[in-house]
Length: 232
Length: 264
Image 1 (cartoon, rainbow over the protein chains, first blue to last red):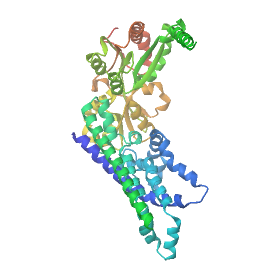
Image 2: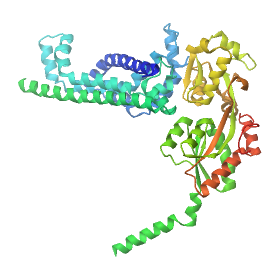
Image 3: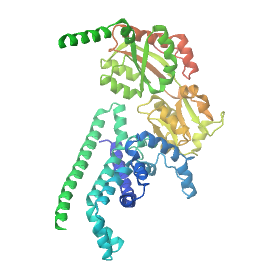
Image 4: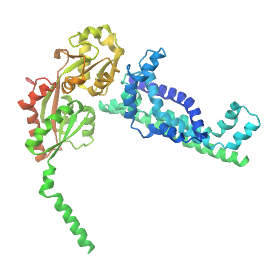
């Protein structure tokens, strides 16, 4: 394997890892609020979060390119906070772009899981004077394990598979913003099919592994859930 | 009864598909155009279509991508490449007629720096390094990117600007990086500027041709072109080399092809 390809793989793992970590932290309160909300604005928020699923990545890439330019809105905002960097063509820019791109994959499984947590269990815990923290860790979290696994794995995998956004705001800098999908694209264009084959095979293997893990864990936890339900 | 109906319908369809009207429609030439030549080609196509009573169907993409598509059996009759190497490769793999290859345009490289006034010295600006990003097309795939790389080498700036380079997939994306303000300077094609001068404010510096290998763009006829299409394809290449078209190309930011090989 070439040095550049190894760099691309490592960079992809870093971007996907950091994106997943930050997104889960954001998706947690967001998913919870959406699951428990009775507001009629809920559908609007849900639609906004689902947008990246149906939008062409080029749309996200185009807006990000405008927003992240030194004259753009995001950069102006960051400058007012005292950060004088540039987001486009940078690692942080990739992570930010990926967060938009993968947002629904983080929020939706969590929201679905939170919706399945029975309200009466939460009420019971509250009447027993459990703190919010212990309600979360001892009631909500164990019952939403499936959602957490799915959310983490799918966010990570989807970010690894990102292409359009990275192509548009990354600038294809080896070792800095050249992710695996871009590296494959380049190899194909340069007619270096053996390298393209290698990286593509790695991607197929990885995607298969992640999806199998998701389905396997869902099955396992489903049976755990049903056993638990029978005993409760 | 049913058999007769089916027979009739078949006859009608067969008749329709071989009627003279449809035949006229059939004289469509599928042209694969490298993305940097799409706009000039769109301007040149109508005259030819009118002359030959034909339709040119233009598909654009990066040269390398079009090459991969043709390897996979894409039904193009003519290929207008951004370089001369890729058409050669097509001939070598038996997909194109090597004797049909001609140069149809000579690319010219420019350095665009919107923040500088026209007339300023772009190279000393690059030398100061007082900017964040320099955009160029991917040198491995895009001829203009390679030429830019060669000029930086000649100017002794390769090492200095290594960390400032950002790569567009092609010159169009390099241009877009500069146009959106994400990069302060960029190497692009002169034709991009010539076709939209108003969109390129600031300094547009014509890079001296001697600092890079010439950007000869070659065309070749593919073996999928047979009979009438083959004849049309040959006419198209002749049309592109005609003095009239070559003159128009110079107003669109291409160089003069004098002295380079081709059908002439």
